[in-house]
Length: 231
Image (cartoon, rainbow, N blue to C red; front, top):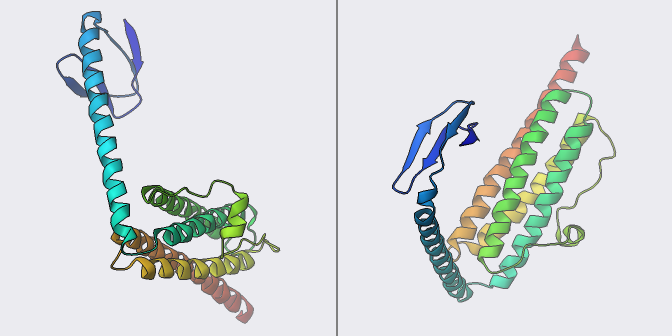
């Protein structure tokens, strides 16, 4: 007998004939492993792995063909360079928001900190989208963090002041730079590379939203100060 710790929403019990999905709670429940099923389970596993290998091979072949088609429409190497530059900028933006959330102080500190933390996760997701697309285009995502500073047009400047207004303004400048970057990538791929164009437009929309969020905080803080001084 073996015990399985059921911590998820479902527990999978596998046999040689079927997979039974049962609702579960966070308790210990025993199950029996049937040795006679080992050979059939192994054959099933081998068949599944074989099918996955075939799928992965077909996907790679389709990806290569897709890149060949793109090469007749635009400069793929230039596109990969632009994506790597954007990737470097995303990691710098990630750190800028992350460190800002740690050190921010002053007006609306808790709210600004929460906003920065939300942006941190979104910048990480942007980096993931870009890295995945670079690989699909048979490129290599920038490997050395030192290269981030060389490739990035949207630079990272260490905060000189920790007050919320200064940090908000620093990030507004970074977002405006990012917006230009993704507008350029969208224009470069428009009507030619629909996948990259969609990715660029998706990130662009979120960067525009980020800038607006930060601007709203600056406006709110300014109004709070004005109201306080008028009392």
